[in-house]
Image 1 (cartoon, rainbow, N blue to C red):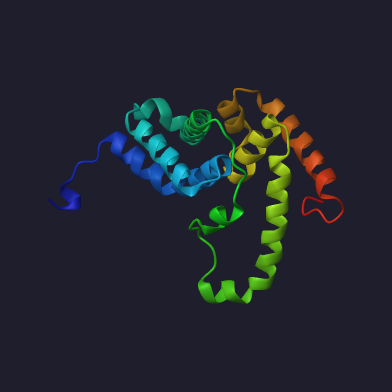
Image 2: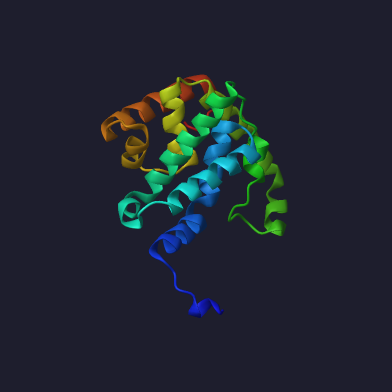
Length: 184
């Protein structure tokens, strides 16, 4: 059977589109919560399995926030099951495929990347020291790239509350990072 003769159901089409667009961001987000690439992949796989069972018309309008909500809940279920928190390993996040530069260009930027990686490790450590609500909002905003509205939907808070939490978290991170802060 050729690809052109296959009939795509709305559910299969939504799943295909979601996989292409959100698999890597969801995996990065799940790694930030679970601190383990394999467990993160399992959580993301569970998220997409759940999506496949949904009515596309019910989730398509809010697909991004729906996926991040389900992924977050699955990650939290995993942590509850294990009853332990593991600090994030930034190297696992950096190992995820992305749409970055070609290898030759990346080699020329190695020194800058080392500094950025060091700054990022410090920032991630500081984010992990924030109160839980601020930590969740910062993960969703900067690792999940969700809008304030989408974050509000995921966490069940108002958009204006999301803005306040982001503002408070950034202010606290600036204090924690000091004068050399990349947030300044």
